[in-house]
Image 1 (cartoon, rainbow, N blue to C red):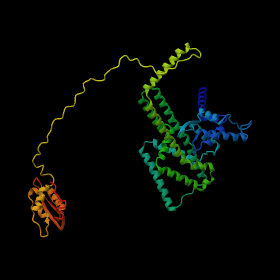
Image 2 (tube, rainbow, N blue to C red):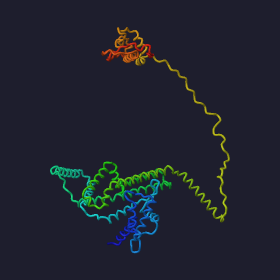
Image 3 (tube, rainbow, N blue to C red):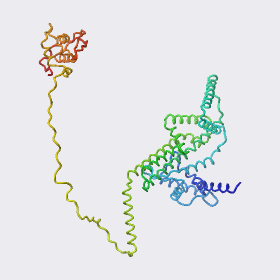
Image 4 (cartoon, rainbow, N blue to C red):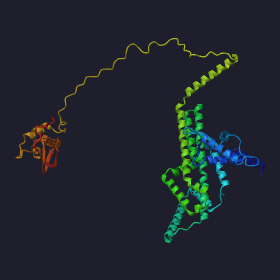
Length: 499
């Protein structure tokens, strides 16, 4: 063993023990601090108002002292009020103090959560080397090897082997109709492994939250210092935010939890599985604390994700507000004014005497302007706009464009009036259209005849009538419609024609 190796290892251990988490566990009052953090800040209440935390801590100190703790030869207790203790814990990095919904609250930091996990693992049930833990390790190593192996054939072979194994298991279940029972000892080991994995999540969530807040503080500081352009600061912020979620262990844990809770069916399935586990007979052998931990796994994941998302939203809001309200020119003017004031004080203080009266400035001094402009523009108003040229609508050209227009109501009305009546006094519309001149036998004129018949009164004949229409270009079209005849029921009752 070389001396250099010993010195390097010792320096590394010294740096590790400067971590707030190890500082908490190594302190004289570590049992009291761990107890208070675990009792006051629970999974159901991760944030506690400052006044409530002080009151609960004072009550806990009084109860412990009345029970004889803190006396000579007994477990030590810290000296001072709850307010002083909480302030010290904030300075040590075990607690965080911030404003939540307009209320000042305490929250356990990532270092505090890590210390609680270590204390819980040491003081609770021992984590044993079991089949479930070894299988978890082997599965993780196998998945890592599969992801790292680029060989397509080897991956296909592994998938084929897995399919054969699953198919054999399905065939065995179909043949026997029974599931092989698992011993209670193995189920207990697997439950302990699940709890061990779940205990790692809260500290990871807390570290992600603190990483986001640290990025927020750095960005706001850079914006206020006005050393670099705002765009450069924001690009660095986005890059660091992406790095937090992709390149750190905490960020990957959060990304995995977000993928789990992003879909409602995943969290519902997790809750259903936990209920099934707690309803199994082997769960009765678990301590009450472990059963409670199993029941709270899904909710703790949801809570951790909400805290990270809230931290992201708050950081974006703070940075956006800073960008909107930050005026570098105004800040430089204020800084220059303050420097001028300080310079004036430095010049005035050496010549001033004790209790020397200072004349207050009643009003701001007026600027000494020699001459102001007396007019803002010329006397001659601007010229009006050029008048519009006179324009007259020309004569409508008499070409075939009129032939492609709508029905010629006046000519159609005259044609219907000149038609002879039937014995019942009606005019057959089909016969009237056939007898009309070619210029009144366009398809649109057929519609005009039907409209005029409807205005004067129209009855159906019950027959199917076929007529031939002539378009303005000479093409012919055949139309079939239900036969109708025109009466004069509405004549003299407002029935008019359109010219």
